[in-house]
Image (tube, rainbow, N blue to C red; front, side, top):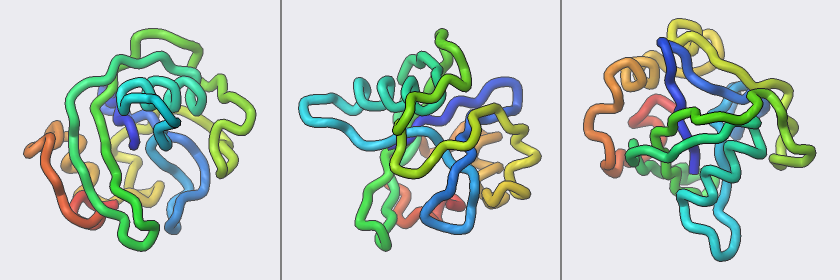
Length: 138
């Protein structure tokens, strides 16, 4: 699962390799045994970004058929923490950086114009199954 934090036209991202050509990704990860999705996202965001968040509405579900994964993405709101404090080994892929990126700069970081549009519009159809990742521009 992943969390999307958007503030003042900027989105919180990790600089790290992804399962595609992008070098930037949304923070998140897998639930551990006994965790709810909400608890897992709060923990993953803290481990990967240093941010303390409040989990908001479900934005979308989509498939990554190549990785046999269902992406569950929630809106998130910052409520504290120390941004950029990444726990050692927080992810299987090294995290090189954490920060807010202007929505206008997402295409040069490998995100599609469709994804930017969805971010700007607040994910119309939030809470829906969107099909393959390509349906949301990822």
